[in-house]
Length: 97
Length: 371
Ligand code: SF4
Ligand code: SF4
Image (tube, rainbow over the protein chains, first blue to last red):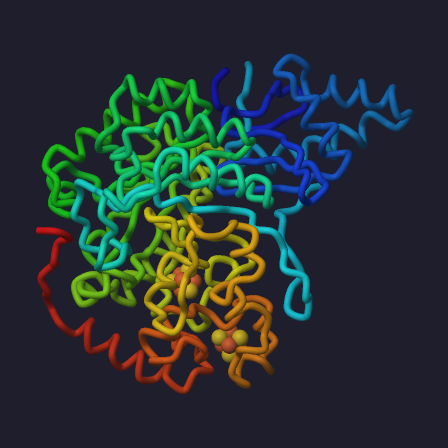
């Protein structure tokens, strides 16, 4: 895995070391922890983060969600890409070719 | 989908649990930075909390809701039990961040920290050249050691942030700092303008950046952010003395974080001990939860009841919480005054004049810590 800046639907990513999803029992939520950062994620975001397995492309993930939720893959892929772009800009992801 | 965790405040009577804890494991430090923000009086090694005491504090912190634990100092690597402490903290689910100068870390020790579950390293840089950096840190060989530490950290796979304090003498090298950080494979760089607490106060004249420097720095940072997006994240803390409004102190007094000193005193902020009217409780005598929720020191500047009318009636009070209490103490002689950096403060004009007077001095000598 190397770092690459640009995100596209064919990107394959996973959370970088030092970035992890954790249960925050005190506040009753799931948080994504990174250096100097804690993000409370809603359910959708949690599902996306959990789907970042470093194997499937973002489009493939969107496609799988589309089948599961019976929603248009196109839209889902868009949402995912925007969210992933934010994480990438903060260097929170590792990329596979 | 995601939001940085924050809390609506002001009239909320409920105090939120803390998000972050800074554990000042020790005041021992081999460096002698002239902008050190540690207090003038340092805690001696014999008074430091023991391994078991620190682990107890970490466990309490995790239960209280702390997510990020910053292991700091002095130089935390001066603690022989650093790996053990890290391991314990990680076992409580805490996100562990080591804030280090690099001195005292070896390749083997970094491997140990990596195995212990260390999440992140923040490495301070005092300059971009061997000569310049070692002059500022007062420690020969420091620069080379840092370069080695950076490579060991990234080779171990631990994410690295480079911390650089910028001040009058290096403010024009921000570009070089960013390049160096990228060369070291850092994922983030934090460029913070020097603040005048603790030891740094003595060196104000030599360290205070000039206005043109501050303007150039703002542009440099904006440009670099565009250029390096996705390569390195750039956090920049601009100079307060040249701003119109103060920043929120630590996200607000007693709202987001707490500090534990080497001997176990619990502070709402790093510099809080400069406020003589406050007394601070020790984790040796009471639980962290009680201190956070109930102690006078933490409750003194929560909410808005303590605020002068100027702040209480100001709409920014939920943004900056009236600014820095320690600076109000230092510059206004009253910890509950409006932060003198604020344009609305009656003291702001005087502060600007004093700043100009310091800037007019063409040179000033640095006083190095402990030399
Ligand atoms: S009170 Fe001032 S010195 Fe203390 S953390 Fe806040 S801003 Fe910093
Ligand atoms: S008056 Fe007080 S609350 Fe308003 S901006 Fe100034 S420091 Fe902040």
